[in-house]
Length: 299
Image (cartoon, rainbow, N blue to C red; front, top):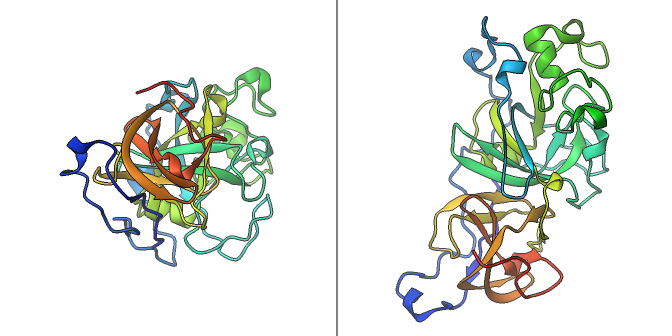
């Protein structure tokens, strides 16, 4: 399993916090299933199409406070260690990135202009990760966009991947854009580190994907100084429970800011914390915003 970068505290920002915000281990292992070398078998119940439900009926959508849409789609593990992604990244063991089935969502190598938040309802964990590859199944299915901007398959409802419609409804004759028989409804691929360590998954599963670049608001880029991800905390300090990971290079939307535990990090020393999602906080010492001051209103 990968070792995430933990937020390293130096001193409390407020005296009232001194007794509760004890220094923790600088680097902590994520409590997740150990990485294996073989793809875990997907439970049949996770894939079996319901006789009374179509792909359209399976749409689950929401928006976060930034306006970025969230859709529930089926996720598969990418694996392919040693191969090269569509943006030129050579896949390593325990990598942290995702693949989406459209080149329009691809970020540059090592960057995260197109990033997502992926949450697994089965485990309650989330990871923020950049889009570094194209797939599964298709390369021109930007299903997160409205029909007017969808490159292909514009007759499908927004939020429904073509593979999902092909698998459940026999859309396009049950085939993908290349004419291959669709054998699962996947709308996102997860690199091994994201799959195992970030989300704690043991098999392919339904996940909630928030397309962060479609939202509004100030942003920051996660910089850890290494290839390892950052622990996301449930509050503004290292005494708060980890709630997931943020991969290095990911561009996140900063919803609001709060003064919390003082942290020494890759970008400096500060008590400033950024809220990047519901119950998700990261230290500004690991978030490049272009300034050491708050870029969003107080929480």
